[in-house]
Length: 487
Image: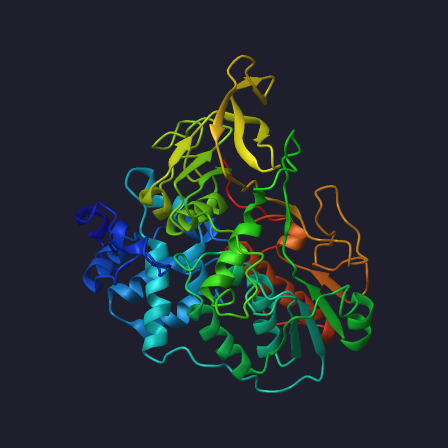
């Protein structure tokens, strides 16, 4: 236990300051200022090293949270780096873009604000890189077995790194022109600057993992051909089919899926849409427009922050449900994930949030472009959320972004069975019905969190290693049927 009296003397959460809103709206850099080492040490001291650390169960990776908190309190960075990487391949990603289910499960959260676990995590990995403590781990032997990983998101990268370190020859196939999947093109730079991805990819290349970009299964190569060329294949394509809103006016210009907005914006930050020969046809600019975002989750917040940086005239986020309470309700007892009102950095920057808003139709002008949306007040009938007749009104909109989540993977190019949920089927060992083909991450679980993707990548790697060699020493933190604490 770092400090037996820490949780008694330090009762409040402390986080690094966010850069002033007017300044950070001028760029896409990460919003946080440099942290104070003493502040972090104080927060690490609050960890109680519980007899049953529920944070271990809250995190699907099973991160050794009390242990690395103790190491950081004592100033033992090398030990903290080792403890953190014992369970998590990419803490720089989860430390920035994870909603921290470990903090929801923190025992201190029963009667105090939870330990700032996520901030301790990202500080360890950032300081570890700066100190040169995070180096390639070269496999001691090469097994002669080959594995193809389809998709370079967090799941695919985790599986690839684990299998490479086990001595297998791994090739990662990515259909985009750059590696990283959702991390690269789905998350704006103000939440995750892309040099963090590149730094980790350099480590993986040095370890022996091979990468092939701009290769799409079904267009450039088939799953069957990969299966015949490799000893095993892991499908880690994610859940990329967006949920739609099939209501009148959906076909109007200016009604777009969130990812059709965010991906070109991320490409623009990488320089793709600049210069005299650049193709900017896919880029959607919110400048001067009245933007409405339907969906109040992380993706909606990413759209909000992006639209504000593009200098939208106004941005309104609509949620069909009621505004959550500021604190846990009795129906959300610890350690379940509480449904509370969340203020992300993007919400601090501007925009309006409306609740109990049921969209009934999109309104267009004479040119076939969206000019507004008709919204009614939500009512609850027999457990269903439906519009209340007579409450309809029109909100002005030049651009509507649908941030409603994802229904499953793009399955057309894969000759794999699909469950009723829309995800690929797999058994308890992550194996599909096709021998030698495994499914991990959102492609099999459905839309989930980055931390679950990494956990499944690690677990699927263990099963593939067992399939290839008959046994494995790789850790398997989760089963395909595991679920986290829920509301």
